[in-house]
Image 1: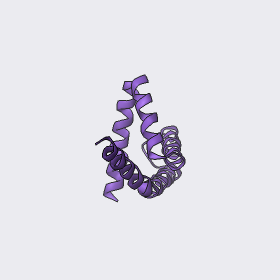
Image 2 (image 1 turned 180 degrees about the vertical axis):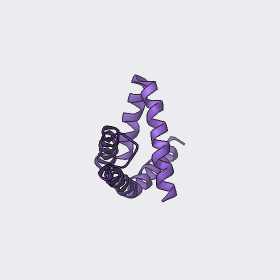
Image 3 (image 1 turned 90 degrees about the horizontal axis):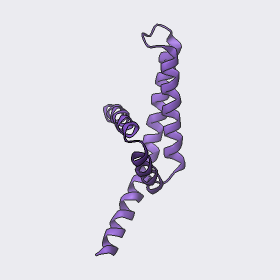
Length: 104
């Protein structure tokens, strides 16, 4: 029974890893959109806030691209134990990004 669970887990990780590239491309596109908003100058949002958001999105994209799904899951579990408040805020941001991804 344990072997079946291990195989299922490996297949799930493999499928997620194979589709990660699409998410990375979407995040990079989102960062470019934020940069273009920043360059327009007529936005109501402070430039520093947009710059921070661009940096965060680019860092998330790089992290996704450079790590396997299993490594990302392990890192997330560790960080959630260390700082649950930050983890909750990250989940909210991830929901926003996922909504943008699904909307596109």
